[in-house]
Amino acid sequence: MTDSLGNYILDRTESLDDTLINKYFVDRDNSKIARLLDTEQYLLEGSRGVGKTMLMKASMIKSQNDFGKNSILPVWVSFEESIRIERISILTKSIDPFLQWTMGKILYETLNKLIQIKPKTIDELNRKLSAIFDIPISDNFDKYISILNNYINILEKGDIESNVLLSKHSPSEELSRILDNPQSFKDFLLEIIDDYNLTRIIFLFDEAAHVFSYSQQEKFFTFFKTLRDPKIACKAAVYPGITNYGKYFERGQDAKELKVQWSPLDDNDVKYIENIIKIRLKEYDNNYWNKLNSNQDVLRTLCVCSNGNPRFAFHIVDELENNKAFKGNSVSSQILINSVRSVFNTKWKEFETLKHRLVKFEKYIVEAETFIKQTILPNLRLWNDKQRKNKSKLSIGFYITTDAFDKLEKVFSVLSYSNIINIDYSKKSVGHHKHSYYVTINPSLLFTDLIIKDISELKNTSIAIENNQSYSESTSSIKELISNISDVIYIECSNTNCDFKTKDDTFKFCPKCGNKIEIKEEESLYKILRSHSIDNLKISKNIANRLKTKFKNIGEIYDAGLDDIRMTYIQDVRIVIIKNAALEYMAG
Image (cartoon, rainbow, N blue to C red; front, side, top):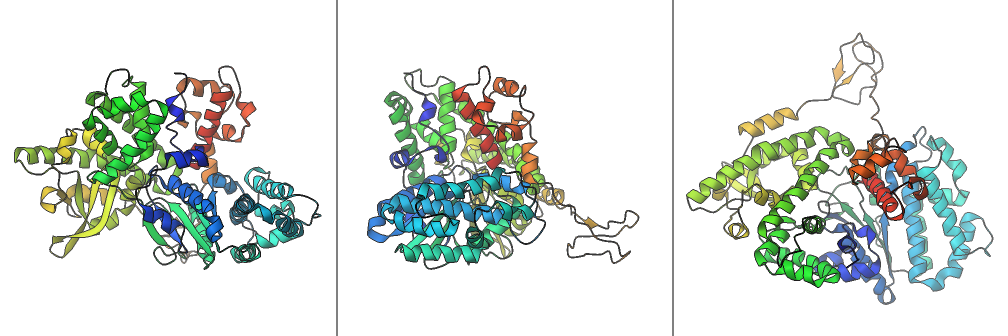
């Protein structure tokens, strides 16, 4: 067989076309697709790799197929290149480069989708675009869309230092007016809806938080709120805990929350992962599926260890092949556990590098890893050893009081974001007028750390309070963790001889000496990520070493064209892999 397993377990949905999405999509909750296509605003929340993009794209395809019945236009938009906009300094309040780029991207995808689904509108649309770009009607749609795309590319890659220079690059005054602010953009979208007899437009905003910088996130969700209209429905894929919605956006009020949840104790949830693996493996080689399926305990363990994350399941399958697990008649339990351990070790490395991207969460990331490795896992192992001796139910997590959780929310947020824990936010009474949340540990850790020894033990677990450990503010490890993250960042007087400092960022002048209070501007995340070593890319050491002879850092590869990357031993296939690795690193 000359084909590669990797072609069938592509772990990023962005790599799949509509045909493959239709072939590979497994739906376990029809109501989510229905909600993604209704008139409400939604935040689709879930950890990395749990299938948010696949769900959005499957929803878009369904809506496309139903367009003839309901005239609803579905538009999927990815914002992966947003990090580039951070290089443009904002010196005046005239034009915001991030919002110009965001609205430009949405407009570009909207126009393309309209022509794709309703091609008969092209003549009328050409007349509309001719007026916008101030170009004779004889020019065709492709010309107009190319002009818009060029403007987006200039915003992404052009030699623009500040927003003062943006007006010089806009293709026309009318386009500048449309993209001037969220309200004028919304008015234009409503014009399109009326002119082309659409029922509504549904925007499916993918990666609508993680790829944005902290300040961009707040701008985006303020913009998201502005678009709200009976004829415009916005849905945004977000991650738990780490998203900055800003002070003008209220979750639940400005958009309902739609969570992608999963439990290792739910047979239907485990079956969902099994079906995803089954489709991909049978498509590649039926023998692979037969060997995995021949031992139900091994198959179920693999599915449970995914923690509801298809991407992680694919990584385990890939590691099984690397370990030649499919050479025999069946896959052994030991080789599976070894493969899971190897893949999760990589996850810990990725988790550690998060502090370079989520700069504001750096301290919480460091403390979170220590907390899990040095407190939770050892304690849980000892707890289950005691439970076994007493012939009592085992545990797969712990309770933590809501008071303690609130003080450690960012610690738990980064762990949830990385799919290392799952948090059940339904409050459980623990007595004395106290309530707790239940936190489950990723099953991969439970199995590889022998906290749960095999799949049969998982059936002997319980989330009842009496069968689990409970942590509170008075617990020594929690008290220490709260102390470790409670350092306050003070804003100091610009006068080095003055000792005044404050936590209040509203001070403009020092009340003690009268000098200016200067808040140091944070270094752009774009610049930080660009400066990182090539060793951080998901490529082999040998390839990284070869690249270092030509490129200094990730930023240089990020900017390079495909042919610029070409060198000895790095040709067509590897060039694409390297470029995608750089794009993924910058986008997160």
